[in-house]
Length: 167
Image (cartoon, rainbow, N blue to C red):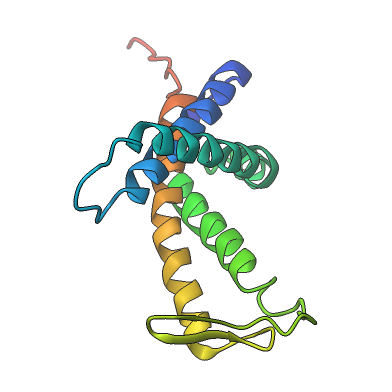
């Protein structure tokens, strides 16, 4: 089994790399499907990048640090663990936000919404179609979270040097 180590400066650089990776991926994703990029593309791209960087900074510093530190302490430091953590945490956070805390927070406003597939919210309650839409969007975001966690891991961790004994 390969042993990996990190240091505080490398971990901080890894978090910065993750923020930038996430913000770039979200910015690129926001322009998928556009027939052409208009004259205001640069301004929109900068705004999207800025907001995405704020969200990824919050996620990586407030949500991911403690689970990552626990895994590190337990010796679970490989890239598959990093990808799994990024995938699961991103999915849970996004799905929780989109479903009002997994349906635990009641909405008294009577809010209703529809998309091209039908109603997603009716009288402040998520419909089955709304749950499915939230699941799909969360799954897509989880893939981005996995890529971000891989970038963080790659910058933060190095293989430990193994001392060889001469015969």
